[in-house]
Image (cartoon, rainbow, N blue to C red; front, side):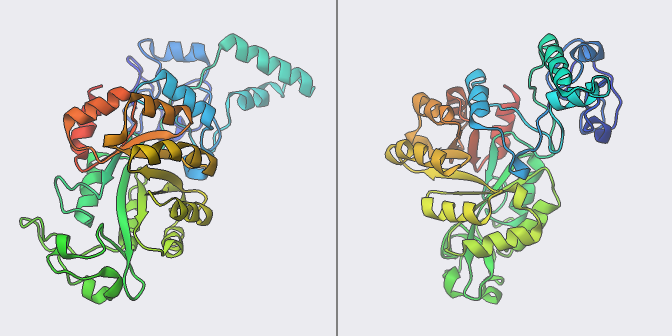
Length: 370
């Protein structure tokens, strides 16, 4: 999040999240730049605004902004930017009520004073810094442009670039170990063709998942537990899981053991499987992946009714009107899998926010230039 021009606040990142009434939150790097969107007038402008109102909870705690809020964000910003929420902070009205209750013991008078002050200050919800990234760039199977797909090296590469989501595919071995691989067999990625569901973990671990990258050293097929440990060590990253097996319960159990329920999403085109994931792990975000126009148009209503977070459509089925329809329904509009820069520009102009891409560096650079 870019800081305010001319701001010289030197408060620490910890104090910036405390909701101070007199100073803006600093940038997370400690540089003193102001988080948020107040521009050009520094701390004086900030003080005139009193403080930035905040909302309690965030997506990590299943307290996400409602559909009306997301609709307004999409209507006012063609890039799909949305308001972010910091966990555990009282909102504007709550702060003022607490402040004035010391002077006005009568609740009715406190309420009136709070509303009066709010109307005069004309407080507006503004973007603020949060723990997790939110740039709409999902590293599809990691960073396949620069590293073998679905390997720890590829995921680490995507994290270093600054994607906000990693995406991977989960299969279960014959002895119940969860492995990360897109295909049901290992021939394409490892050179040795074995069916994952029919092979024990010890045999799968002998295969080289970097087979398609001759310049890379040996890389075993990673397990879900290994990737969860990597995500846990990088608190600004979230992970989207695409189950390729019926073991949704085992996947959710692994996520809960790792303590990452608040930073997990599920994505797939199988509606029933997504519903099972949502039931087992209510904190998770759900992205409904659609393959064609028919599934897209029928899927909008289904996704809204099911309480899903986003709809990610195949690039051949999207146009400006369908993107608008997804956003108007309160869903995050997304597209898969886009690697061409011209196509990235086209979908950004349509208002698409979420991108699954094999080339995250290209998309991040493009988004930074906008």
